[in-house]
Amino acid sequence: MRFSLVLMSCRSTVLDLYGGPGWETQIKERWELGATGQRAEQRALEFLRQFDQGGTTVEEILQAINQYDALLDLKDNEKQLNEEHYRRTLEAAPWRRCPCQICNKIGIEVIIYRGKNRNRRRGFHNTYVFYQRMKSGPERV
Image (cartoon, rainbow, N blue to C red):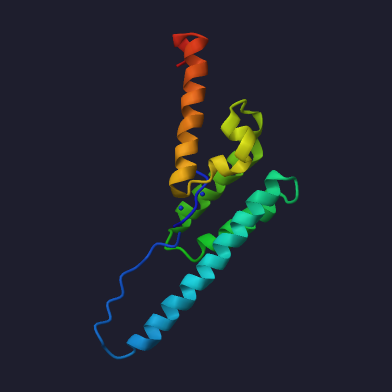
């Protein structure tokens, strides 16, 4: 599963092997790439969590995310666009200003798109924000 800030895991590819020559090498290479991807993903997630605690910078996070993105099958313009979105989101740190209990409790995790529980919590956050806007008048919705 790849994470995405706006942060989702290595896209799985179907091996077209069927016992042809070199299939063992191909499997080993794919296995090693998967392990490398998992390490890069975990490193980027750790940097994000450290950032939320004030322990790292946006630049360090972006470097870790770019190393992870380099393993993915993304076009250069997608990588650059992602980096711009990541930078803007991290610098704004909207979860720090949000008064909802979800953002207060889980912090930066709320912006990391990963797994059903996080998406469910994000849904509660969105419902809270929508409700607050409705209370202050329909023109804010």
